[in-house]
Length: 72
Picture 1 (tube, rainbow, N blue to C red):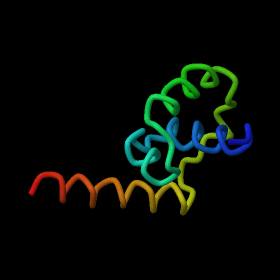
Picture 2 (spheres, helix red, strand yellow; picture 1 turned 180 degrees about the horizontal axis):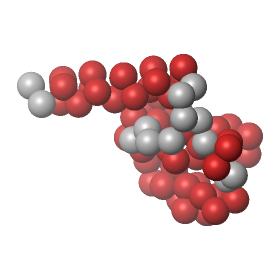
Picture 3 (tube, rainbow, N blue to C red; picture 1 turned 90 degrees about the vertical axis):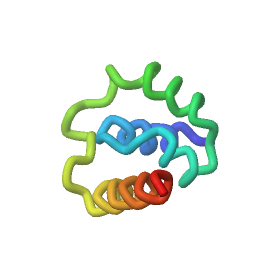
């Protein structure tokens, strides 16, 4: 996976999307994402972390839906 794609996933994780959700969406092992976040979190400027981006809102919605199905 290219560094640009990894950074996109890192920014989404830092925005609050759960690693498990990102792992399923991007077909990446969750531990890989956790390692990318640990390695890169200090190098991501706050203005690059999506806060109200539509994509992040959709991922958060998906996260809620998955959690509700998991609770069934």
